[in-house]
Length: 159
Image (cartoon, rainbow, N blue to C red):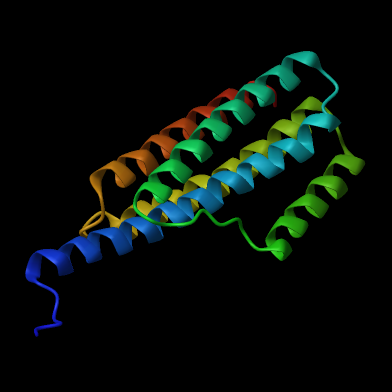
C-alpha cells in the first residue's frame, strides 16, 4: 500500500500549514492590540478618546473572532502571545501612563503600538503572499493593516 500523499493532498497540506501559520501570527498580533486597549482605556480621562478607543476595541475583537474562526475551520488552534510579551506591554502602559495620562500622550502610545502592529502584519503579508497561503487569510491580514492605518490617522487628531 502506498503511504505517500498524492500531489493534491500535499498541496492541500501546504496551503493549510502556511495559512495556519499566517492566521496564528495574525491572531497573536490582533490580541496584543486588544490587551493593550483594555489596559489603556481605564486610564483615559476624556469621554471622546475613551469612546474612540472603545470602538477600536470592538473592531479588534471582531477581527480576533474572525481570525479564530478561520483558524478553527482549517483545524488550527488560536494561541495568545507569551506571558512575557503581554506583561512587558502591560508594564509599559502602566509606566507611561503614570508619567503622563493626557489624551495626547495616550494617543501617542496608541499610535506607537498600532504602528508596531502594522509593521508586524505587513511583514506577515510579505512573508506569505507568494506562497500557497489561502487568499482569504492574506486578504484578512491586508484588511487589518488598512484598519490599523486608519487608527493611526484618527489618533493623530488627539496629538
